Image (cartoon, rainbow, N blue to C red):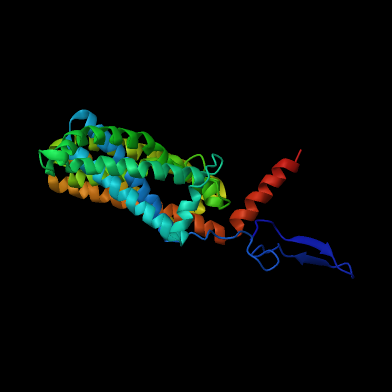
Length: 327
């Protein structure tokens, strides 16, 4: 539907006839915009990829500041997150060979191609860093003893390298969605990477607060606060993009986004109050992880809503056309 008022024209006998505004529900029987074919696997992929990226950064920070318990949690969560995200991506593609085929070329102009290569680089690095945590379980002598001695150093290098690629992994999915023609994603291109970056750090901080030793979680409370500031700032801009911001505020997608924001506020506040309380840390961590899940699924659903309703495509196009034709 459009926002145009009915036009009037004269009939054969001179009477005024009202011409109703055009209905843009279809274009010659076809949808105005083809909805994305992605299933909810991709919404899960958005979450697990961000969790992996944030956890790699936390693992590297813990490595550099001498927090072995937090380092271990960060590394294993990064590996688990990237493994889950790879599975969800391949499952959505339908055939594992399609992921392999995407690695046959590298196109810097394609966010999907760049993201595939980021995932392919991050995964092995996160794997080496996590497996290095098993070194103390190896025998002290022989070939395995040699592996026990060199594994920590190799793991440290891999952990820092994974952290170097983590910011790109955390934010490229926002660029990927904005690069589509889906109105609520496309118009949010300035803010989606910030929303996803904050969401990634919040989720990783949440897992750390749940699983890491309480004595080592002080940096996570500050990180949760920083993540909330970034995500709230990006979310505020997300809801100011005009008509196409409606799905972020109304309907099922709007409820998910609002739930994510509320959980983020609760999780951050509880984290600041938790100190070394295991119960409060667990509550805070669970809220932060749930916040990230709700936000990712809310953004994903908002795009699907805007693709199905033609007004989000037609009305902004007409407004842009009027602005360029008016003197």
